[in-house]
Image (cartoon, rainbow, N blue to C red):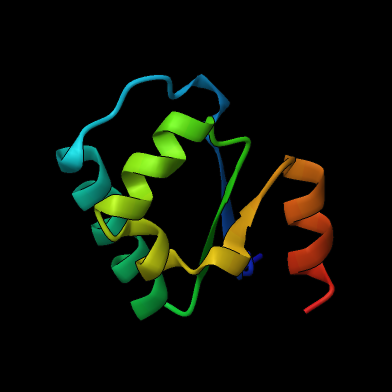
Length: 82
């Protein structure tokens, strides 16, 4: 059996309390790699200070503000609706 590739990946960022611009750059690289494979990246449960840094570093622009969710459930629900 051949498994179907995922159409989206949701990162539960609840455990991320500290980050820096290198972390934001890595997130941008992951987003670009996934997008090149036709996979959407979304974030959930991002702490406000982390979100603020990722916004300043351009990671949220790369991912898209509409791909940042309060909960994993919200992300899965919205992304599975198309």
